[in-house]
Image (tube, rainbow, N blue to C red; front, side, top):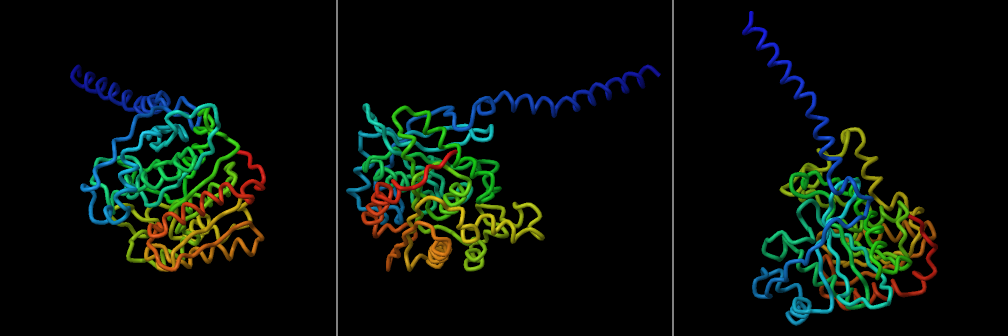
Length: 354
């Protein structure tokens, strides 16, 4: 009987420890730095790794920029380029911050950049991979540096889906909170003019931009390059991407969104500005290429039509021949965006409250 009693006591002790485990994990999570900080709190920052030499880029990377433009960004000393970690919904999220090294007494306007891609594809923080078509972080950085030179602080989120959660990217789901959390992050920086915030979205980042505006992000104007405005129409046009049922970068909408079999239409509409253009209350500049093979130009035309029908302030410019992010028209693209942000439409934009 004594050995049996010992076994019973041992089992009871083990059961007690198992019952305590959930509480332990909850307590541990609650003690994490992000859980203890308000949304947008910058938890850490460090200089981003230097851009690699031009020769080390793959063929796509070397063809994306003129060498002189790339090298100017690689060797510049006017701006600090920082990888940051900030709090959003109690979790740490990685991002990028480009700020003047000597901001002086002036208040700088800021651009919130929403990247494209999904999961690990398209990330803007450095992952040590060779920079080029698949890992475009250094190319994005050179593009964003052009806006810093034009007089803007630039901040961007890498969204929360990285590492173990990378393939569970909801594309227009809870990660929109990570975009909204960039606003208090900017407001915590004494050199930023919180009354002059603007937003730029590329590709999937267009979806994030429209959703952030819908939720009332306090920006003066937005620009969208090659943005997705009707998600169902896009996935139907590009079934080979495997984004519905899964590919090497994402488990697929059908496996991520709740009750996809019965609620797919609801999910698609919630992520598609064409169905709620009446809630876009800041001026939007839409830029696209007629020959874009990744996101067809019809996505821009649908967005413009929806905004036109609702009487919204927008401008549409279609380039006759260019790639997805408009690299062949980079200078004109950037000029149009900066003019849009500095122009009368942005100045007349109604005040948005967070």
